[in-house]
Amino acid sequence: MINVSKIKKGIVIDHIEYGHGFQIFKQLKLDEIEDVVVILRNIPSKKMGKKDLIKIETDLDLNFDILGLMDPNATVNIVENGEIKSKIKLSLPKKVYGTLKCKNPRCITNCEEVPTIEFTLVDCKKKEYKCEYCDARTKL
Ligand code: CTP
Ligand code: ZN
Image (cartoon, protein in one colour):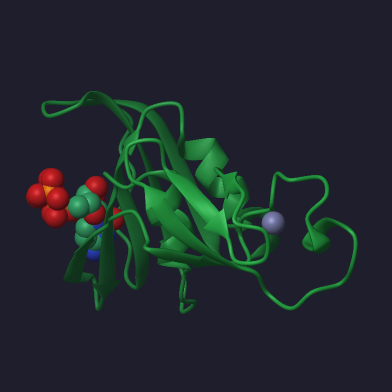
């Protein structure tokens, strides 16, 4: 297999469902940062069969809410001084601020400028969230 070196400081997003790595790359806007980013796709994995993985050598923080929403089974490894300092097991966030867009065309949030919208998880299985303004259900 292709050998990718370990990182000194940053974030390794592991156990990404295969085929989702690029979507996560885009959603986290990793194309806009100046740091080194590596996406590995279709890596053989004992647990998952195949998986994607993203390594980011950076000082930046990431929005784990977005990650939890996109791939709740991924693992976030925080690396410092070349070693894994912590492993964060993601989950579906109970509240999401700003990432989602209300699907109701008549919702005020689609007609007027509103502050960051709060979406509340209402269905874990379907990953559906409720808009705070109109109660309509929305998913990513
Ligand atoms: N990693 C890295 N740089 C480091 C340390 C780790 O890029 N300085 C990467 C490893 O290459 C691996 C991931 O972080 O892809 C997770 O590392 P590790 O916890 O050592 O692997 P596993 O034990 O397989 O992880 P898990 O138990 O979560 O499956
Ligand atoms: Zn709405």
